[in-house]
Length: 105
Image (tube, rainbow, N blue to C red; front, side, top):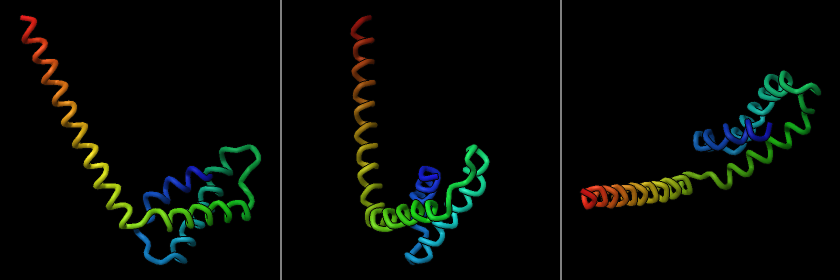
């Protein structure tokens, strides 16, 4: 339940600008997954509503405070920088390998 909901929430967070709407949506998603996936896949059936509500509340609060447009932009810049570094490193490595092949002839 927790993983299903949090994975969805991490991707969905920036679509919401109102915390109340966000919290209700996270709870609705968790309840839906509880009724369908959890109820069908576990022999004990679905989780209790209180437990589902607490999981949804935790995920909604964490996501709201940590997944912000500003933080997402900073993360994307960081990832792009690391991606570029990786590309440069791979190019250098390939050039070195090609030089070794050429020197061996």
